[in-house]
Length: 417
Ligand code: APR
Image (tube, rainbow, N blue to C red):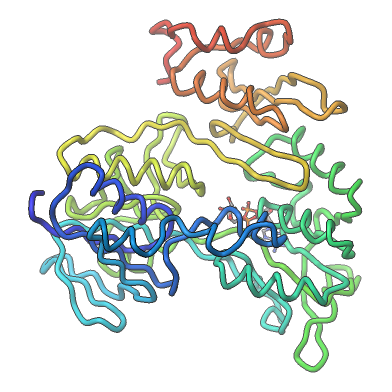
C-alpha cells in the first residue's frame, strides 16, 4: 500500500481511528477522512451523560485538536459527504468537493436514529440524540422543560432519563417491550435498573405503543399511547434504536444485510472496500451467526484491524465485545454478547450496590453484566477473550478467586470455538 490513497468515509470514532492507526503504523500514502458533521471527530458516549448534564465541555469531546490532523497529514473533510461510490473507476463523488480517487475505501458511515413513525413526530420539542448538535438542542430544552416523555428504554432513553430526573423534571418512559434494555441485557439487570430509576422518580410504562404526539402552535404538548391515554410532555426524547447507513453500499452493489457484509478481516464483497463499526455486519467468534455491534470498542478495534491489514499486518478481527452505560450513580459494564442465554448466575449483592450477572448458554459462559463491579468486568474480558471456562458454581461462589482463575492459561478444550 506504499504511496497509495486510503479514503475513510465517516468521521466518527471508527473512521478517526483508522486514520490515526494508519499513521501510527507508518503508512506513508494519502489519508482522507470525510465526515458529514461540521466538527472535528468527537466522542459520542458523553453526549447522553456528562456532556448532556453540563459536566463536560465541548473541547473535552474532541478526540484530538485540529493541529493533530495537520501534523499527521490526515486530510480531514468535515461537513462533507460521500454521495456515490464508483467501484469500477475507484472514484467517489462528494456532495460539494467534486470527485476523488481511492486505492482503498473504508466505510465507517455508522448508523442513524430510527424515526418514530407516528403523526406529530415532527413537532417542535421532539428530539433524538446521536450528534453533538442533538445534545446541544436537548441541553437547551431541558432548561425550560417540566414534563419529559422518553420513547424507548434502551441505553439512550435510560441515560437521558437519569440526567432529566436529576434536574428535578417529571420523567415518563414509554417502552414497547416488557422491560428496559431488553436488546442487550438479561431480565435480572433490566429489573434492577427499573427499580433504581423508579426510586429516582422516573415513571415507566412498559408494553406501551405510542400512537400520536399532540401539539399546540407547532410545539409538542402530549404523547398519546394505545388505549387513548394522553401523557403531558413539553419535551419528547425518541430513543428507539438505530438503522445502519447502508445506502451508499447498496447503491454501489456491495453485499449488505443488517449492515455492510464483511468477512473476518472486515473486507466487503469488494477487496478494495472495508467496513467497520456500527455499519458493518461481520462473523464474530463470540456469536453463532453474523453480528452488527453498536459500540465504541467495536468501532475502535475494527479500525485498528483494518489499518494493520492495510500496512501488511492482516489478522482476523477477534476482539471480545464490551459496552458500558452510565445511568446516574449506576455504572453498567457488559462483556460478551448475551443474546440467547438460557441461564444466569448472580454474584454479589444487588441490595448493597454492586453485582454481576453471568449469562450462560448450554453451560458455556456468553457474557457478564456488571453493575458497579468493575473488577468482575475486567476479569470477564480476560475470561472471554482467552476462552477460559468458568462454571456457574464458580461464578456464584464469592469465595472463588476470579482474578487468579482468569490468570490461568486456558486449556485447549476451553477455547471459544
Ligand atoms: N415505542 C417504544 N419503544 C420502542 C419503540 C417504540 N415504537 N421501538 C423500539 N422501542 C424500544 C426497544 O424495545 C428498545 O428497548 O426502544 C429501545 C431502543 O434501545 P436501543 O436499541 O438500545 O437503542 P437506543 O437506546 O436508541 O440507542 C441507540 O446509541 O448508545 C448507543 O448503544 C446504543 O447504539 C445504541 C444507540
